[in-house]
Image 1 (cartoon, one colour):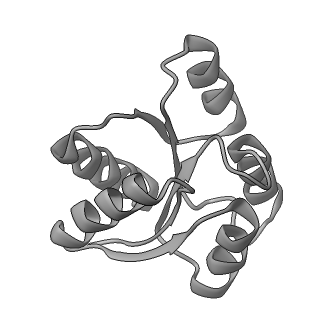
Image 2 (cartoon, helix red, strand yellow):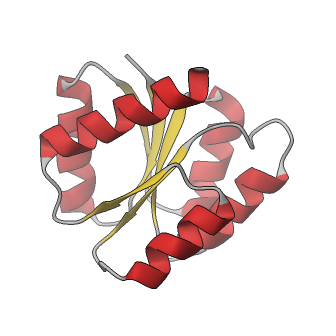
Length: 124
């Protein structure tokens, strides 16, 4: 399965996401904020990133911009993760190059399916 970085600051959600992804066979590295997540991405070069939009230090949009501006990281698919189901967030994410959007609360199988789809699409 996929090697991934997950950026999520809420401990309960973080544990649930990590358990879901690990059970799904993925290799997961967790970050509780954007700056730590960027460091992990540069160290591990994951196949996909799951990125919460609202984090304490830097917004998910800012992290996405940093990744897409970096020639070594721009091709890594990024799925945005948010508790707010707002069409403008989805559109902004698409415009910035996000591979998809997952809303909290999430269905574990939907999360796994979207990750698989994004990784497959990127590897073609």
